[in-house]
Amino acid sequence: MSKKILLLTIPIIVILIGCLTALCFITDDTVNEVYVRHINTAEKRLSEGDYQGAITYYQKAIDADKTQESPYICIADIYYYNMNDLRSAIKTLELGIQNANTENLRSKLKLFEQYLEQQSPTDAADNKLKSDTPKGTMDIALVDTFAAFSFEKYSEKYTVSQEQYLNGVYTVRYLNLGVLFSYDETGGDKLIDSSTGKPYKWAMPSKIEVDDISTLIYGLSEGVGESEIKSIGADDIKTAFDKTLNKNLMTFKYKNCKFTVECDENGNILESNCYNTIVPEVSANKSEKIKVSGKIVNVENASPISGATLVFRSGKNNRSGDAVLTIESSDGSYNADLEPGDYTVEVSANGYNKEYFDLYVSNTGSPIEKDFSVSRSLGSGQIRIVLEWGESPSDLDSHLVGTTGDGTTVDVSFTNKTASNSSGVIAQLDVDDQSGFGPETITLSDTSGEFTYRVHRYFGFGSLATSGATVKVYTSDNSQPTIISVPDSVSGDWWDVFRIVNGQIVDINGAVS
Image (tube, rainbow, N blue to C red; front, top):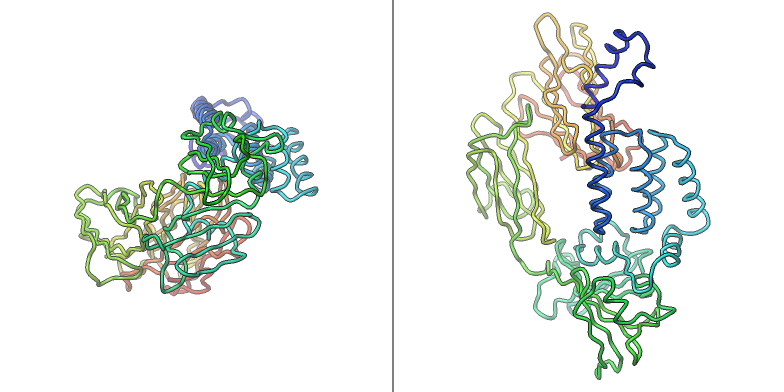
């Protein structure tokens, strides 16, 4: 059952039953079935070592029934014991206490807060892992990062502490990571943008060196040999003496990375500061084309638009250059093969405004899904507001409140989708999205008076500041929308985006493009 339908239905149930406590005896088999299905899927993903997948489905279970303690505890344990992320674990438990508030949640939170007070999050999680984990076990979350992260992803997640570009090699260190990353284009791969002296967004490191290999491989005090490395699922394991380096080296492949680690003459890795290199095998440094697909949708009803044309141009904000690719979409969907880089996508369809979108194609090896939402031309004096965001939080809500020039009160949201006066409907919530991304759309037909447009984080993990939310504002006298991005400074669950005063957009809170 949709939570918003439930919220609208509660007053009626109260009237019919006469007592709010009677709601405790009403069961919703559909909700329970959805919850159990997501829990089962999450547990299967966890057993397979797919920690991010497990978190995703535990979150879906919470969306189905936020009063159950189990998924919060499971997510917190994954963050702490498997991903070395104590702060995310604590945030998850805090959310669980807000929604469920059980003794187990409070006890777990108290324990994790003690860990945070005693040590840095990395040390606490690392020590716990080392005490409970068989020797030879790898830090899977860190290896997955090495295998998949491009320069852009590292830059987004970590703060640079030291960097240098010399003789065709860019090296960088990040705070609290203990790793040296090298991007080497002397072998022929073009990895460095000459205009910035930094790697391209999509570039993968040519070589990764870990300062303390014991942070990656557990059990070095007892020695880690070929048998232990093999037991974690590594293959192509070899041990040999390297004359050039004058070292005994163990090489192996694990989770799309090739490892070379110094060992003793018996093939045991013993020293925490030994020579090591890690090379991601999935090469995002080659200009292989990436599959990009998605839909062209109407912002008024989120349905696909037939007969749309998409023109892809290389570079940001390139609205008139030569097209890299042109696609005619008959059914509202598209598929494109594009090299890594920035693109401007022109989308047009009969009866709709021509619009332009920035698209960044990152060569991580995975297909990219990207929808483009466009608006029909507005009537005189109309304003259309479209909210879009990322995967989480799962539900952001649009609210438009105010008073028209004739004194009509407007309070439009999912609880009250229309506002009317003697002339008819003057404001309405066209689309209410509850599962991430949007669009969520409000159209205002009477712009006389004063109104405030607000965004509310209704449910889901993550905050408004990290949601990637943007608000597109269309007016009848401008074919291109004003785009407002949520500022980093937003805290809490509300973002007052702008006001409308007699048809003019004022008091904008956010970056505008």
